[in-house]
Amino acid sequence: MSLYPELKGLYHLRETIGSGGFAKVKLAYHALTGEKVAVKIMDKRQLGPELPRVTTEIAAMKELCHHHICKLFQVIETETRFYLILEYCPEGELFDYIVSKDRLEEDEARIFFRQIVAAVAYIHDVGFAHRDLKPENLLLDEEQNIKLIDFGLCAKPKGGMSSYLATLCGSPAYAAPELIAGKQYLGSEVDQWSMGVLLYALLCGFLPFDDENISQLYKKIKHGTYSSPEWLSEESKELIAHLLQVDPKRRITIPDLLQHEWLTHGFNVPIEWQSKYKKNLDDDCVIELSVHHGKKRVDMEDEIQEWKYDYLTATYFLLLEKKRKGKPVRLLLKP
Ligand SMILES: [NH3+]CCCOc1cc(-c2cn[nH]c2)ccc1C(=O)Nc1ccccc1
Image (tube, rainbow, N blue to C red; front, side):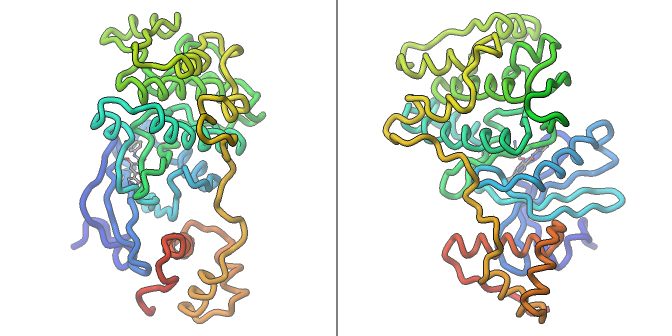
């Protein structure tokens, strides 16, 4: 008797690869392509007040399609569970990578931070603020590319990114002063602050604001008091200081960040933040699916473009993944 009957024949479940609070994440194989995926399983009865986080995350991830954001392939909802079928990131959390190396050299930190800035620039452009940026929510794929996860606390202000938010959320050590002060804030500005904490963590291996006593921690954040280890270059100290500006109006903005000299050093081009994923359907994938389902190509295209985030959506995206990796664009089983 399968623990997860809704996945039978669709995904072959393997070991648990992560868990966080109300969710368990398991490695699985997508039956039709043989590709690995991550299955985030949430029990509705355990979610309780966290239920809105799941609907928020699903709605956001359906709108986000970027090479540095963990891709959502399929959503399965039953009476008692949610299953999110997600892009598999075999190299785990950036958090563990930093810990394994104590701290990163500037060149390596720059490569990761350019990818993080690209992902955040994209989600802000689409109208979302993540609001929980931290190394635990940045995973690494097989090529050590950054993949942003956990959109459960993200916000898409109705009036756009210039509209103020007020909800207190995120992880205290990464939270901006205006957020912990309970003031109204702009989602883009709190994400910029969190990126400052992230950059500091990449280059130092520890947090700029840390204290076991939460009110002492809040005091340090509110005053923006942190120390700069002697190994930090002047340029990285300047960039960190511009991100960790207590006054959100003096904090560096994404457009300035994209062409900042610390970030372009050695690259000499601004960060290319737009999504690399193509908007139009891939012919090879459509043809393979139409043959598999015995449908006319035009009918197959119409069905795929409904983007129902069902098994067909997952199979299309995973065929595209196979093509990107240079594998044959073929499905494994006949119906
Ligand atoms: N800190 C990450 C732990 C593992 O969590 C995930 C892993 C993957 C993953 C692993 N490989 N590929 C994708 C995809 C999504 C998650 C995730 O959303 N976790 C989570 C977030 C908030 C609350 C509870 C759980």
